[in-house]
Length: 114
Image (tube, rainbow, N blue to C red; front, side, top):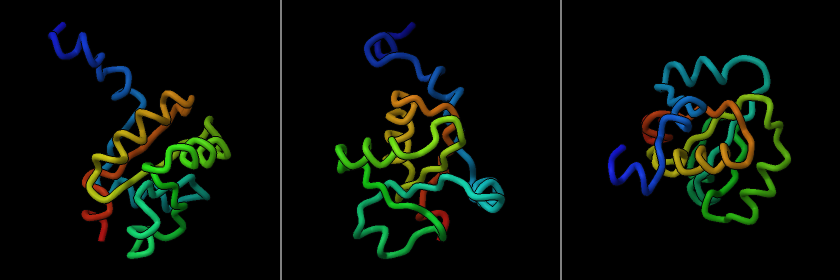
């Protein structure tokens, strides 16, 4: 175990439950039945364009983030994205800690989608 992994923990557990999908895979996955699709960008970013049917839950508003995700079904897959992919990865790790078991992230974020 490296020094850094001993400090920050291993990513293997997270990577087993957080799946990063490319644009095509993500589009296919969210095109089916009603899915839990969440844009974790700010309201201002969301209003500038977003994936159809996405719900906006701002990652930076932590109190609202936890409350809003608390209303979603933790046993069903949740699809998250942000602008470039970094914020949604942080959100995905937080969702793991909240008890979500199937988390899918859009590789490259909304900037790759549009």
